[in-house]
Length: 412
Image 1 (cartoon, one colour):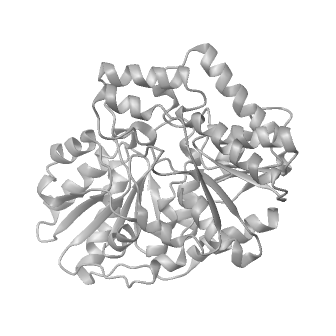
Image 2 (image 1 turned 180 degrees about the horizontal axis):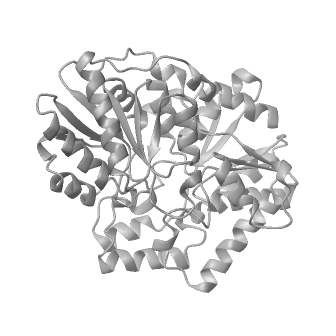
């Protein structure tokens, strides 16, 4: 959502008039809502909110759960029979995904606009949910509109795909939808070079020239508050969703070792957002429960505040196939916070490359305990000299949302 929101925020000032077609929040179902972000929609931007048809209301009744699944199922049990059954149903009977019930409502809204004589130079569809790309495919077929397919994540290679237990028929149909979208879109946007490479391999009919990388980024206006790292603790913060798939056990073990080697250094961890029960248990097993703070989901601006009130930042890439191209949106806000970044994930990945280019840190392979410990000990040594480890330089400014929206405008 933030990627689309930030594009819309900056497009009018760059000479492009956007019309947004989205779901009425009273009709849709979401794990969380951040109403504060509504303030970022520029005055004068037309937003059309439609009805939708989704199965999540039935899901909550059948499972007696208050929340629908997060992306990647971070709030779902991996062993519960009921949860595994619902994942199977989702992966085989709701293709490409359960959000497809919105498509006919969105198509009706666009048809009404065109029937009123409105003219559009292009349509942009952003996913996941990848069912949204089928809206662009249909608009291309019906009206010949120039179509930009914005693929924020892989489709059939997304990291939680194996948890859906798809049959051969479902895998074939899902791949067919993906191939049709990639072949018919006029422009395909991806968020990382490796994702571009992955999608280009889906069909021999694809032209590399229509594939472009526009990464996620950060909004400069979100970082006007000052950086105030604590003086009484070496505080490492993680924001967002994290589960066992991210394999941070060795990092936690390295943090625990640091606390034993440097007992006078108040090393602390803070997780802001959705943390799976498995990760909470890993923290306890490492002996870090009394040094760790867990905070629930907070509005976006509060989340940025927690970054700026930290000594260093933690991020992790899920340990799944094709993860070299996974670029969490948070990496760019982490960079804008100018804190040292500890990344648990594959070396040589797109995330690792960006961290090194900006001089902000590096990725440590999941099992490289020795390298993680050495890096943490270096942070401790620096902190004992000064509690402010903020980084110099402005290499991160290339990832400002306005600069990235300028790239989009050039493509449009």
